Image 1 (cartoon, helix red, strand yellow):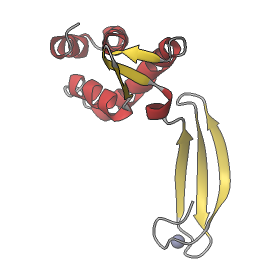
Image 2 (tube, rainbow, N blue to C red):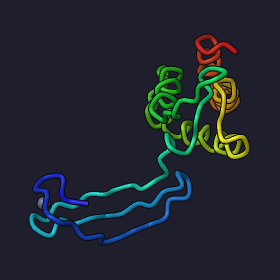
Image 3 (cartoon, rainbow, N blue to C red):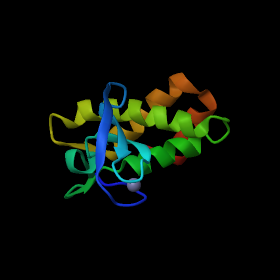
Image 4 (cartoon, protein in one colour):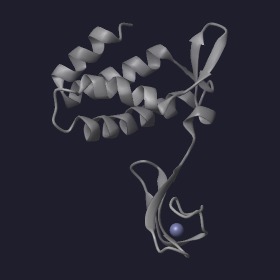
Length: 135
Ligand SMILES: [Zn+2]
């Protein structure tokens, strides 16, 4: 990976496994301008998980779309962005388990996983989510 500022080569100075998001975190330093930045490597879910969008079509899974739906439900909370980010990881954990067998998930799988995770997290968020995501 090149430096975001000057496009020169970078070196990895530190690297750690991140279990919560199943990724690898790396601290990088630019060999030319000295800029320090971090990268997070994780599985590309759009290539790993397909969503049955109709009886005959499969669409790539979108982490951003899931995050936004959870964020909308948590907007009343001051920590909405962090909460939605953590909830997204929890929901993805459940969905990956479901997607392994047939190779795809359905809209209903996503909604049920979100409702279940929100139910134990915040009742108002769960109610909001259910109102905008009927089964
Ligand atoms: Zn640089």
